Image 1 (cartoon, rainbow, N blue to C red):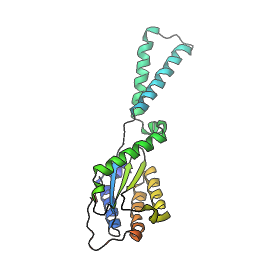
Image 2 (image 1 turned 180 degrees about the vertical axis):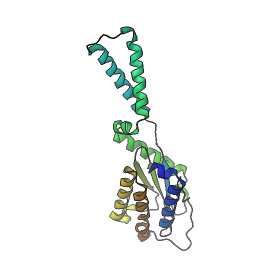
Image 3 (image 1 turned 120 degrees about the horizontal axis):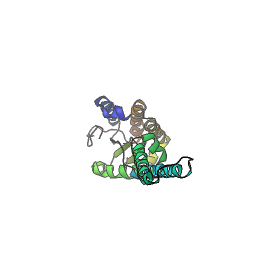
Image 4 (image 1 turned 180 degrees about the horizontal axis):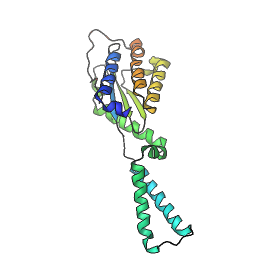
Length: 205
């Protein structure tokens, strides 16, 4: 999905889905996509440390004579190799990063974007941020105070679950379908009025 979002065609598909939703409801949707919310450098360093420790164990216990004078340099090289490997191997790093840390960082980034993008400034406080973190394969949905989420019922919760699955699978088609499905759900509680105006951008941020 990251590749599709990076293309103009992918952005246009999401924009059209937002337009379709907002044609049915007074709610205002904003989709924000981030490649990653943090750099997770500590994971790279931990992998580097593990590689240097492994190299040291090999030097000490493998039944071959190694040059003692070069062991420190070899350990540093092993550390650098592990760090670079982690930095350039997203699946490995994703496995090693704590799920709780990922949830915390994505939530923090989403809340910051909610404010930075001015979603709180709509007249009816009816903005909804759909925040997508591509590296983390997480989605965070934040609704302003003018939207009573409990009134939206289980259909709303199910639609958000579909969006989360789409991002987890990096499936743009599933994401667009899930996004479009929000329209009828929101329309039941917040139908679009004749004098509604578009206060937030439809483009992918």
